[in-house]
Amino acid sequence: MSGSAAFVPKGYSAYTTVGSAQQSAIAAALTVIGELWVNGMLNTSTKGHGSVLQRLDAVHTVKEGYFQPYTTGSCAVDAIDGPHDASPMSFPVPSGVREDTLDRIEINDTVLSGWPSLVCPGVTKDQIYGIPGSPEEFRLKWVELPQDPFNGSAIGAIILLPRSPANSTQDIMVCNLGAGWGSSIMNTSSDGNTPMTSIIDLSTTNTAIGDDLHTNYSSVYQLPPAEGKASNTVSAFFLPYFPQKPIVVTEDWARYLNPFVSAVNKTVIDILMSPEPGARPGPEGFISTAETALILLLANGLSNIGAASTLQGDIRTVKRPSGRRKIDGDYWFSAKGDMFVVDPQESKDWVQIRVHSTINGYAYTIRSAASKVAISFLLAYCVLALSHVLYAAISGKKLLGILVSEFIVDDLGVSSTCWDSIGEVTALAMNSTPTTLLRNTCAGIMELDIFKIPVRVLAVRDSEGDGEHLELVFGDVDEKEVRGTRIKPNRVYGTLPRMPQNEKSE
Image 1 (tube, rainbow, N blue to C red):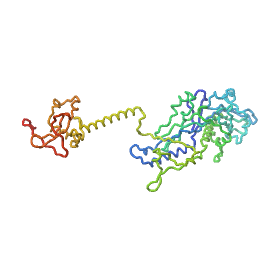
Image 2 (cartoon, one colour; image 1 turned 45 degrees about the vertical axis):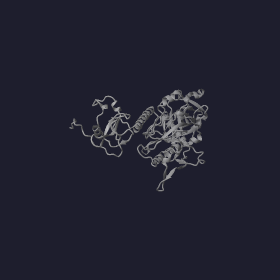
Image 3 (cartoon, rainbow, N blue to C red; image 1 turned 90 degrees about the vertical axis):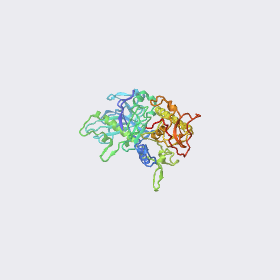
Image 4 (cartoon, rainbow, N blue to C red; image 1 turned 180 degrees about the vertical axis):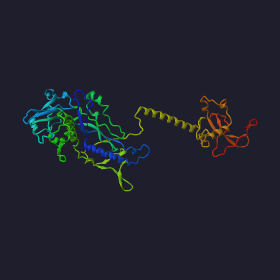
């Protein structure tokens, strides 16, 4: 929920610690959507290879119009010299704010051990010294900081470190916190093993932020791949560019962030700031702990605004043959409408969130250039094949080298399934009279002209008797003289001719 920025653009404070938390109401709604996705998938009629039923590990994303709180802060060490110290309180300059947006005349580099600071008007140290609580515990005092000169500050915080009652000097941590609503992208997965994650939405940031942010962060802030896991929680705080909607917190609201925990008889800040047993760090050793604790307390409080809100409407269902009702997954996944049925008048003032669900798998697409080229070649091949089929069906022509299960038996395109194997075609060729068109063609065919000769199956009268047999006859269909006649349907052929006297049979 918190992290340190790895890159600090020019003009920003270094070592900026950023905290963020998803809006609890939206996160809860997205979790419910993930559960409904699984239930909806199990109630669809889509079946077969590549069915979405096999991909329940979808990544669900909320992006449009979603803002979540981002917080930051900086702390410095100071001290109060007894209950009568009337010195004005100073706070560090706002963290994550461009220095050129602050009044440089008001910045003092000597009060907080060299840390740039601004004086808070109307607040003195003696007012802080006597806040309620045991001096031997960590105590917290919230202070409202005016925007002039604390431009970009949400609220100030003073942590009183534990001291002995006999010691009048009180060591304190003075902190300046910033907060704002930033446009974000929230993700979760349906597999049930992935926590809710979020990243800032750079596409909505002001381009005036310059090359520093976009160049150095664009490769880091990427949407998680839809492979069953939603990952990469990333935060940032670069006012005035991000977050887009700065927040100013009141002292009364901030008091709720540090409740008293009766189970351990301590406040939240005392629990978070307490060191490990046996450790005795100096005041400077609490700076990092104080920054992290306050930043997360503020982010958590802002994220729970509206936490009581829940999804509204009735889930669309259909009635089974058994009489029981189930989720209408087909309606949802076919994009016919929303999963929930709501009353238009009742819901006119409700907040609507749109969830994008993504699964990683095989799909047909023509987005890439390679896909478009491949489809073009495939379509051209289909046109060529279809043209050939139509030509063969109409003209009855066949190339000699093509063996198919159906054979053209005359020039009208009549076909037969009598020759559905190579052996049968070979036997027909051996029982056919040699043709002069294949003269000197015995082996080593190197040209395609042979395969362009039209060939038909015709009925040829036997040399003796009235019988007829079938032969392969080569020649153009327009020839005036052609050996053989057309085959007649439903007639039996097969009588072999008598061999010439000078022919020997082996």
